[in-house]
Length: 46
Length: 168
Image 1 (cartoon, helix red, strand yellow):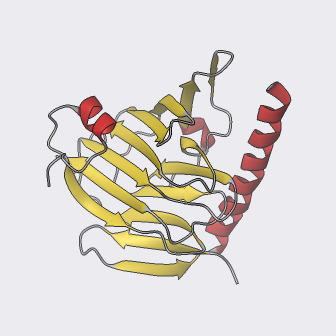
Image 2 (cartoon, one colour):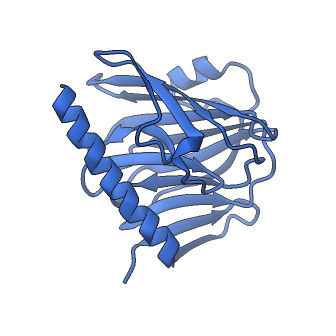
């Protein structure tokens, strides 16, 4: 099961919780990896 | 809705613009992002994350039109050494964050209703003054903004509010 995302339609104010699709999940994994890389770089330059 | 509910520092920074509240939500626990869709064209958009918490230490990024192209996001920031770079730039870096509450983060984006470069200013301040942070950022995408995405590198808890304001 993939993580969920929250969608707010600003025209109707309807809120829905939906599962990420494959593309979004792939981007999420990239985000996690980028965050870990950023952490590593900040630690190395402190 | 007027500007009076803004944090004092933010209100001072944004002057007399007539910001209206577009939506305000508490993130759903375990969700990875809050996505404001179907936006009317606004000249300016302002995101305020107040007391939002992540389940584990991570980062909150803000994307425009769900664009994760890192080449489109540029920022500079003040630190112990001067930095101007596009690293980690798959979205505006609202700020690094963690599980600390009582924190306000905001991002003001200008030129949202034009097909040109967008300029953004981000700030963060923890009540109790552990830290403040300021980032000046550019978005090189040229589309009018119809969607704004508040994206976590981990997951949100059901805490705090993510509010989106706009100036027409």
